[in-house]
Amino acid sequence: MKDEISIKERIKEANTVALERMRLSRPILIDIKCAKDILPQMKKNSIFHAGPPIDWERMCGPLRGAIVGTMIFEGLATTWNDAVRLIKKGGIEFSSNHDHDAVGPMAGVISPSLPIVVVKDQSNGKTCFARFVENRVQFGQFDKESVNVLRFWSEKLSPLLGKAIRKSKGIDLKPMMARALHMGDELHNRPAAGTLLFESIILPHLLGVCSPNDVREVTKYLSENDIFFLCMSMAAGKAITKAAHGIQFSTVVTVMARNGTNFGIKVSGLGNDWFVGKANMIKGLYFPGYGPEDANPDIGDSAITETAGIGAFALAGSPAILALIGGTAEDAIRYTYEMRKITNSLNDTFTLPIINFQGTATGIDIRKVMRTGITPVIDTAMAHKQAGGGYIGAGLVRAPLEPFKNALHAYGRKYKLV
Amino acid sequence: MTNTQKKLLDSDLRVINIGMTIFYDALKVQNIKVVQVDWKPGPVLDKLSEEILSKIM
Image 1 (spheres, one colour):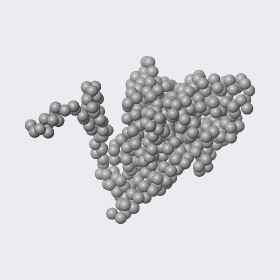
Image 2 (tube, chains in turn blue, cyan):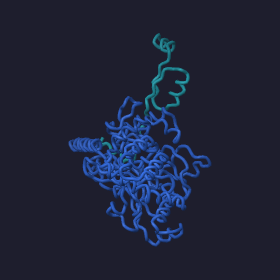
Image 3 (cartoon, rainbow over the protein chains, first blue to last red):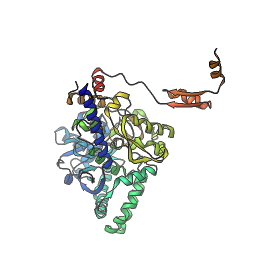
Image 4 (cartoon, each protein chain N blue to C red):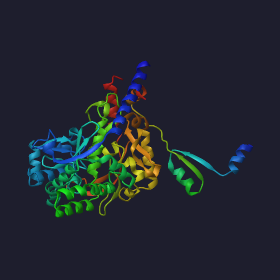
């Protein structure tokens, strides 16, 4: 009995530390840099991707499509067949973004020449990274027009934004995110207010370092791509959850990510091991001409937003997103409250006016998920299941229970409970 | 029927619904005062999960 009390107390203390570190985390946007210049393990033939590690044979269509599109962007291939030949010869080394402190939306593919967002956590000095958000390659498209989106980001947008960000001496993301939540974002599928806030903050710095034509081009892009800020909220989410990672005995989930085949989690007190289960199908709304038979299972690192206490965990404050993902405002409030049953605290920074400025549920606990059977809710976009099929809709999805069960079993073994 | 039972049936209904929301929704559209309590039974877990949870929760 004495030992049992002891382990419970240790977990309580460990989770208190984990949540305090999440609370104190202060992600600052400091730069945009080429992946090969900032990710130590990024080699010339590396491709990093969303979700837990997976080999080519088991990858889903959209992930394969995004990889081929990115290989064409890198000059490693000119056609689908070229790319697949090189992959099957073992010419590409695949790795999970999260295993390099990075995150990417949907397929989330990061390659050596692709510029990525750099965020430094002022509370601990650790650095995290995020791929930018677009609506083509990350959904598995690899045609010329899609590859050109990566080129535009790489050659035009990121150098200009990078200069402005460096000029700013760093942009504090957490207050912007808190403000965006009060402006109707949930900062996963709806980061529109965040994008506007970012635009207003970066504009003076852009004016200081770019020509008027360049400023016009950047601000036009930001005005037309209100999903842009998702890469910032994902990078910040990664920094916040990383701050809570690696605490002995903690049962707090620090990663949730999907590769379109599997859903994987990491847990603070369980080292860097992945715990995986089959990715679920998304329930939501489809663009005209598409239906459930076209959809791929859940994919992307963007569930790092929910892991950090935003995204679907803040759905009550973002009724406008329901037009994209379906459901009612009452459902949104219900989900927001329901997530309290599987978390350890209410966020002191991310608050929602609609529920009297109470904080969002934060700090998913594998014990509570397993005891209640309630798994985290995620709002997300949907990709076509075939490579090249693209963006077909958005909706809500639940994390599968299996990764939490696997993590609990590993916890029992690690801490000698069984 | 006792007086208490009769009194209950004669008074306005005030309901606490536990679990499935279909009953809550049905009462609400009939303008009956109803409060919803979200609850569902926990999952039936494997033996190992139960054993570990019993030690850490």
